Length: 145
Length: 285
Image (cartoon, rainbow over all chains, first blue to last red; front, side, top):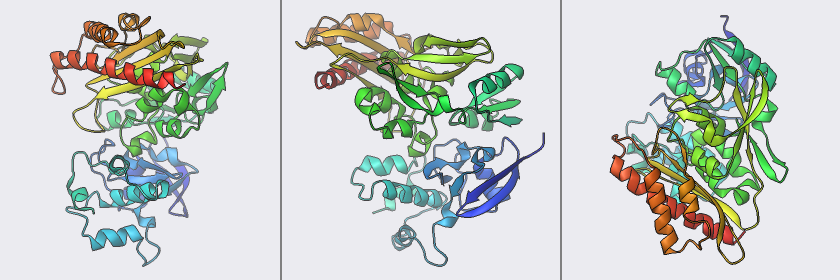
């Protein structure tokens, strides 16, 4: 079976890549496009370390096939800072040292940005909680103010 | 492994019927995990998300038709569905995190064939009918008849769930779904209970459907539990009858997430609580 030839937009740039059916978007981002900010934690959609935006919707990139993103818009942690200028969330995470091992931090940042875009003043703990999955690995969130 | 994304139900059916080992891809939140764990290694994946019927939420004959590949997030964001079927929308949105809700679908939740699927008791309580498309054309099957047991479906080769039809509701009707998990979110139901009911102007329950998940090999429609409250105001005695009937229907397994005794006990409690929530909602409808 020939590989799929996929054209998509990643962080505003037109990209094209070849992928096998079984390769996930996360595999493509990390191994083909060399965007290694998104991390593989659980590979089952539980941890959220691989969170990206797909057509404006927060998803786990480990649960999306690479060939599904044909013609679609993907935003990853690499697109969050504008040049040298960090996104306010990134600045705040740095200021608060809001990480321990840090593997989920890119995903938490992407999810936090998505949360704030949807509800700019999230007061319900559940809002934040359901966006920041981390059920099996709760370290970073304990440090967030 | 081939990947196809047909744009018609007929195209999807033809592909599924032609391959020896094909899998439908809707949200992928179960399929991709099972592929990754080497539980599944299909020769063909048929992505149904480009088929318009699977992606639409439309009013039909006074009821609602929900495409099998509509995501939980889309159901939640729908301007009217949550008002009409709050239990169904809540159940779909108990599945996983925000990330998972952006992908997970009710068609996938049903066809994954888990007795603990959260949206299934809510659909069954709602009286939902699945519209299947297959090599012999379309047919309707009540949701409670789609799943036969763990990972076993009543679908024939080449058949897929295209959409669900939620019937029109009389005035003063509503529904609710509750589940028990050991933590606050993102877990597999130890017990789930869906209740849909209608009350008359005097507050008497005139119709009800009660469905229980994760307490048997398939999601149950418990007619005895519904009968226990029809004709009542859901007073204390009716609640007790409901609990007893719900418990009597349970044939759960014993596993690390819950013992047989615990599941049976909780099934009664959740059925009662879900009925009270549905009653409260129905009165204000």
